[in-house]
Length: 113
Image 1: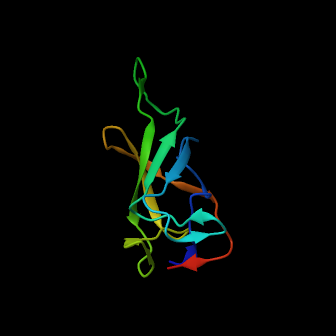
Image 2: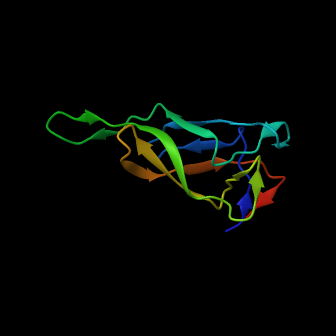
């Protein structure tokens, strides 16, 4: 599904409100001065308050995003790009899936599929 391309300036959140910071592996392709986001980049989550419910709750914050469905036809620096139409899941440090990444804001200039 096509959508506006994500860049390092895009705003993403985990399902619990943690902020996702995109660190580009290579900033060869840019849009409006921000590197195009690809599956080779690091998508780190900070500030996730999630805890596993129990008698004594166990902290299990989201720590990273894994892209399950990147853009199928667009690539930048040899890696698939990601866009508003891509599907990603937030993961705990244990690798447990915690829910879909939320895409809040993207650049409006370029779309990919």
